[in-house]
Image (cartoon, rainbow, N blue to C red):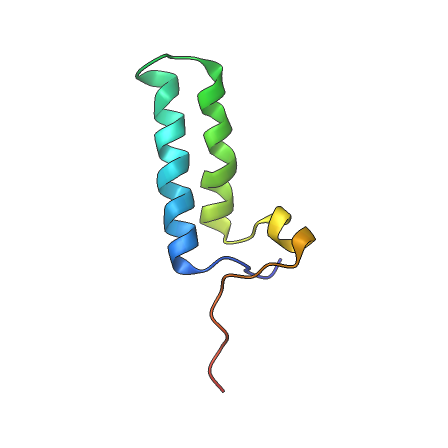
Length: 64
């Protein structure tokens, strides 16, 4: 799987994922917080299947 997320995109996804997962333990304590696994994992791996389907890529182009 090629990386299709840039550094800022990955950081935002990891932070958002951790924030959502924290809702399982703190706050309303509902199972909806586990949806935070999706942005967390895509941020950690650097690959987003939705970006691949839409042809998006937020990575910087490699310098020649």
